Amino acid sequence: MKAVEMANPLMQTIEALAKEKGIEPETIVTAIEDAVLTASRKYYKTNETHEDLKARFNPETRQVDLFAVKHIVAEVTDPATQISLKEAQDLYGDEAEVDMEIEFPKRTDVLGRIAAQTAKQVIFQKVREAERENIFAEYNQRIGEVINSTVKRFENGDLIVEIGRVESVLPRKEQSRAESYSPGERLRAVIKGVNRSAKGPQIVLSRTDPALLIKLFEQEVPEIYDGTVMIRGAVREAGDRAKVAVYSRERDVDPVGACVGMKGTRVQAIIRELRGEKIDIVEWSDDPVAFVMNALSPAKVQRVSIVDDKERVMEVVVEDKQLSLAIGKKGQNVRLAAKLTGWRIDIKSEEEKRKEVEAQFGALEIGEGESATAEGAEPGDAGETAQAEEDLSAVAADGGEENEAAKAEEE
Image (cartoon, rainbow, N blue to C red; front, side, top):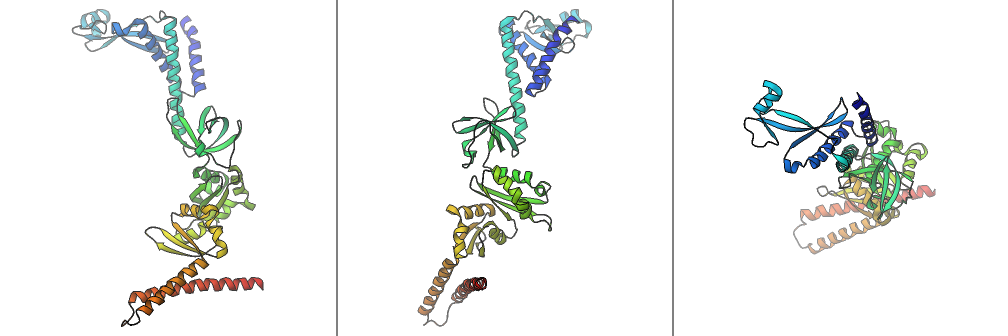
């Protein structure tokens, strides 16, 4: 009874340590068994004696018992690990049989201070390994999730942040150019990955990944959270601009309006979180032409034609005054639209297209003049002429409609 009472603090320590480190008490018990075994092997010099030692936690006495294990054999060749059948039957009666194991208790109170230090190191190492494994398993399942963290310090441009009691890293390449941070500041980031390292699992966060934008929309827009509105794609140039393609499963729900919110409250909350990053919300369409026209928002597109369906190339014609808006600052708008739609987009103004068609039409007229002595025009030439005339008529029609609209506005 006295041994149980004295050993009770050991169980209290095990339970407290398990709670603090977030690991199972059985893991710590196993670590203690390994620690006692390691210290005992060093004390009893098993490298020389070749004894087979085993440590086992006794739940009744709440102490770790140590045993020397011997195998019952018909003929003994290694006295340190074997015992003859006759000796075993003298100890345990006829129940003892060949190939069975017998455990002989050994003292642990003689291990001494050095052995205790060894045991302590082994326990700490095992607990640390178990804690790291738990952290890796937990956060590896949470990749893509948005978490709250606190800035702790800077290391060579990387940001070390805390998630609860766990440290994680926000690498420089995953930081937005428009953002600056200071120690103690709270920020939201998406878990991009978990890497194993010698110092334990390294949780990598990101503020530039499109997944952060998608998760923020899920948190701010109930229609996205419940699945009424779906995000079909998102692209970003972090700190500058982003485009999000949305689609509604219900005809009565406007996907763009749901994401923008009343007076822009929903999208403004996301813009504030991303420190002023502009966000274009466009409606997704299974028609690639309509999708490209939407993706080039806020520019207004006049005409879209598919140049090469196999290579996914489109030609877009916009008004002259809309050209710079469609292309965007340093080509940003058309670049993001191309990433979002998966099509290569060639943007031309109406004036450029008109000159191109006129040049083609002029070349065809010259070609026809040179072949005037021939018996008749080739069928291909007639087709090309008709196509050029059609393009020219379309451009002229667009220009006429634009002039009529301008006159109507003036009146």
